[in-house]
Length: 313
Image (cartoon, rainbow, N blue to C red; front, side):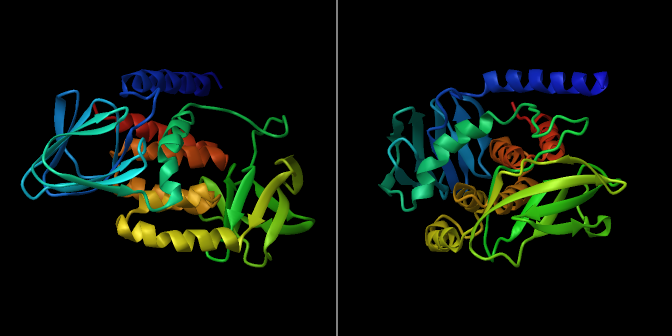
């Protein structure tokens, strides 16, 4: 127990050290750089010029350079603009928006309401990068489940923490019980269950943890599952906007899914994005947030370790 507590304390200290070194965290990012092509470079206050290979949040004090053939796009959260940056440009980022030192840009209003919330979501995601403990029932076993999960025919899955291989689980939804057998558990850290027989509506759910056929813990029975085709339709309609920003932009689609409550589906895309971009700690914050929302404590701790291991100066 002392060793575990010490590890959490060390992780917390590391988090605060990193947080204080991140530019303009208190105010949040000015926006998100996407669709970088060719030679595009970024620096913060003239230090450590780096070529841009991935999506990245830009803060007050950031500077972008595009060489011949280099282009990118910037989602300006301050002014709700989508900015196309041409080659041979130098762009400075201020907390009021962007300033063109040289080169050309074109701007137009953002098409897609969920994009306007990225700045707020980043600030929220940062708060989840510390170790927190919470459970509904105070027992020797710390167990809880997500307060709200939205599902649909396309995204029917719910998840909860896998406490250990010696335990079984019972899922209760409005009085109907599902037994989760150990041989059906595929992921070592969490349980995934597909609800393919629900009709549209709102349901209370809880998960019981059993050992030797005795219930030893259970989650809050007031937690909610919402089966919504309306939210699914919104996601489908927003796909036009997402396609414009890159059909393979997993990160932005994950943000959209999280915005509409599909946090399990969002988690899946954030996980995939992190696997493809292991050094993108900014995006990793969003994955940590979904783990927190889903009460997947082991996944969260492992991801926080990756956050520090892949921290770039």
